Length: 173
Image (cartoon, rainbow, N blue to C red; front, side, top):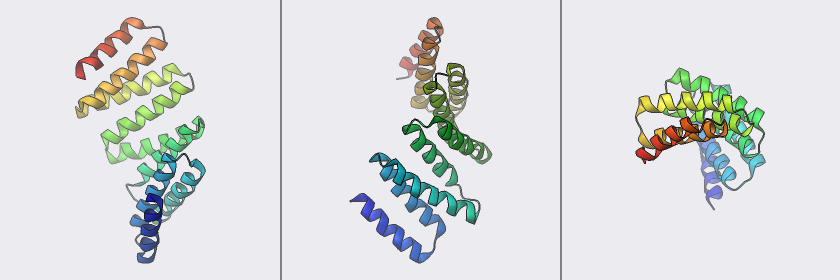
């Protein structure tokens, strides 16, 4: 039912001509399809939203759309495409000085490297994410980064350092 309501909202927004609102509706429909596992359909809506943003200029929602496209590709294990869209989002987030979203994007990139068995790449990006999250100070995000780093270090055979990160994570929780 949610998709029907979002499509009605999209139709109304198309009639009103607000590009930003159309993009928001397309993103919501895309997210709904992601949650239902309809990745092809999700990409259709997300790419339509991306095309509107690219045609009409600067819109801060572009980073959300790019990251959502990256997530769709990651869910399908199309890691090269996922990295492409996460890295595009990351560059824009850096320019926007949105540190929290930047940290999440860094973590997403690290996870892709991890799934590709590139533990050094995963370690590098999880460390960058941790650094930003420590600057921001949100404890649950810091704990997540510490836990991710602990897992990568354990996979790399550095059990003492892994234990250190995991214990730090537990102290925060």
